Length: 211
Image 1 (cartoon, one colour):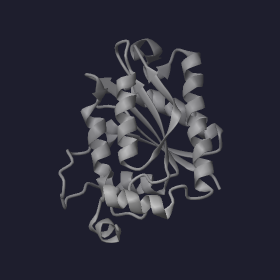
Image 2 (cartoon, one colour):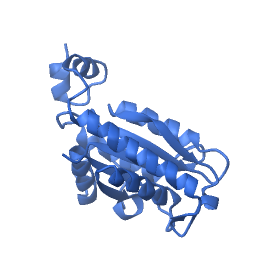
Image 3 (tube, helix red, strand yellow):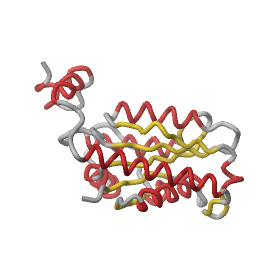
Image 4 (cartoon, helix red, strand yellow):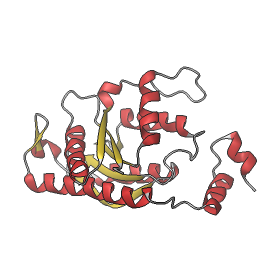
């Protein structure tokens, strides 16, 4: 069975280096045998997430349905003022729709992380995304790709540095490989699930199941 890898990437900019980087990483996942899909932050055009809202845009529902069915993800955000962009964080906030799924959020899904920066730093966005992955009960792979001075590495959506392209494809292949291992058997044990529900319940059902 081929695993499915979904990329969430981009920004509101017309030319997005983070989206270009994610597309290259997806090439590596596809070369490793995965089915792939990409969600462009700009095209999603999500409204600001409002907790408890009863109005769910079709784009948010489609995104969450695809993520629930996938085995792994690639996240790629630009670095804005030391962290991920507001539009990228808003897309992650809409993943609250997965809180009442079984299993909830990103349980046993593998996530690969990419950031693009205009300056010489890039790791801060990766660090932020790692915290979010953990909060959503996912697993991030150790290999991360922070890309400083991304304006030097990409032009019109194309990568100019073949070494960087190879690194991104390696990340995509690693996510597909790890997702395949995860898909062969659930890693989060029932005991761990009960502890997560007790410490950080995400729904009334989890509160009732918690010891």
